[in-house]
Amino acid sequence: MKKKKLIIFMPTIEVGGVEKNLIILANYLINKINEVSIITISKKYKSKFNKKIRFISLRSTFWASLGKRKKFFIGLYLLLKQIIKDRNIIVLCLQGNIYCTLLCKLLGIKIIVRSNTAPDGWSKNIYKFFCYKYILSLADRIIVNSKEFKKRFKTKFKIDTVCIYNPLDKKEIIEKSKIKKSIKFDKNKLNLIHVGRLVDQKDQMTILKAANEIKNRINFNLIMVGDGEERNNLLNYIHKNNLDKKVQLLSSKNEPLSLIKASDIFLLSSLYEGLPNVLLEAQVLKTYIISSNCLTGPKEILLNGKAGSLFKVGDFRDLSNQIIYFSKNKRKSSYKIMLGYKNLFRFDYKNNLKIYFNEINSLMN
Image (tube, rainbow, N blue to C red; front, side, top):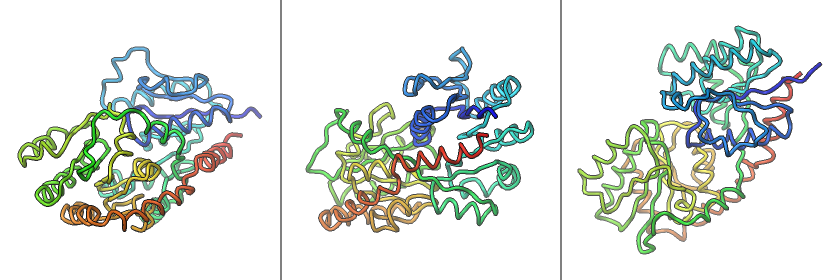
């Protein structure tokens, strides 16, 4: 029997952890599977993929400017066309999980879904709860990226999942961190950094409130790298509270890894996550981490606070106290950095990619 072809469904490719995982995973799988295709409306990052990977997209660049939901439906149309043309496929879905699962199961196509965000982010909505509990459960496999995430899925939806950690390419991270920094750092200041999309989920306002709390107590510089709908709100807060000389808001076009490497503390303030790649990158670069104790991922990465510091979600005073404590106890905190670095073997590049392949291959015949 002929082995199935793999189609990866990801209508929107932007800058972020999910996208990094897509590139790593697709480039690995093309060396294991005869034919790998990606259905996407975004072709901007095509050059980062192995040339043997086939892009299934639309010719016009106009469609790339549409919103995510519209891209999902265009992606589903492209997937439907492929299924009609050739049913000898298996789908790996990284976005639009509900829509894609429903389409595949109605047409008798095997599908593996990778869920990227903790269920607490969407389970409060009754419609979404129903969709995830009764439609997503139809998928042949559901992959999550942290053990805590796996437990939450089981508790909330009674659904069994497979936990595969994000494949971490330490060598590539270290190489990229050597790229010349876009700004200069003042070594006499405590250098803080945050990297992430400027959206509600990431809750950057908590970081700015903490910065406002400590502005007269310690000498610091805060860099925030990212783009998104919350940018103007954050800028307004910075101006209103006279933080312009202490806080810089940079576009995601800036290479963040060299900035993370040069910083003293990496800050994460998310309301919920899956397994935040950016924390792993900070650990590789031996930058101290202070993160919200959100579901899911940070606590697991930071070994319950033994490899960094955790603060209560949304509590800017707790965060500000953690920053001040670090500024006065840098040497005491250095052992946490090394403990985190030593435990990065859990996210080993080769091992986790191999698990991905085994899960996909088990459905290929």
